[in-house]
Length: 339
Image 1 (cartoon, rainbow, N blue to C red):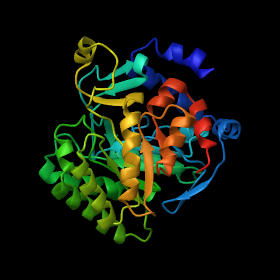
Image 2 (cartoon, rainbow, N blue to C red):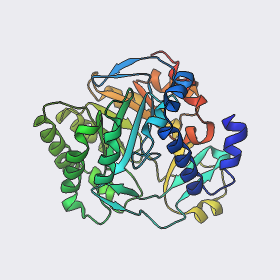
Image 3 (cartoon, one colour):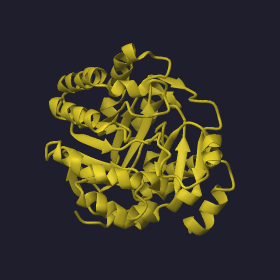
């Protein structure tokens, strides 16, 4: 029904308008008594697994970016997701980059976005997260810095967000790899990254509950930089790695160069990421401890593609763009997979 009815309708609108329409529809689901539970009974595929010390209803997670403000996490879970990652959340609300900033590329099953961490800030996120105290799905929080904050002071932003979000989510994701925030990528250097990851490690040690910490990595890192990031994952006892964020590369796109230039800057997601991401799965798995979760994210559009990632060492799968193009069916297709 989604691919043949709802998607054609949504794709009549510009991508950001369609996203707002979808969020409004999910808010109706979220706030209609009994409806989330009914949908979950119809659509949730139970295939539980233990990962990062948490029990996931299934291995399919919603990647950060669709529910930036923790508005409809339970509604997303009712569509079958075993985990939902909200954010990216920053200390202060910010509008993000100028519009238009989100583009579909249907011929390549891809999206390009330069949203720029648009969100309502940590205070608003916490108010909404409190609604999910009795959740039956795994809830993650993706944290970032405000665009106006210089990199030299970024650690303070990350500290504010982890302090605010820690008691309201099941795991926390460090996002220093989004290509759509000016100079954010520089935080992936070993010196900056070590400082921020060390702060998160020390903050967690002070808490009564030791929640999983996860690093989200850019696909654009050189191999040496990637290996340095993985060393820090071990050094600071992070529990998971998400590979990957969106890419600035356009090499795998089939559309004309003129169309690419017209779209401009932004992070590319979808099928064009799959081949390169799969190639790096084994390298990452080899260079992190066996008890550190490897979460594959990027270009996974079929159960077979998810299985290839699992065969290369991934423990879990996150999707975003494939959900936009294929709807809830892709969740159940992947959720049925066995390790």
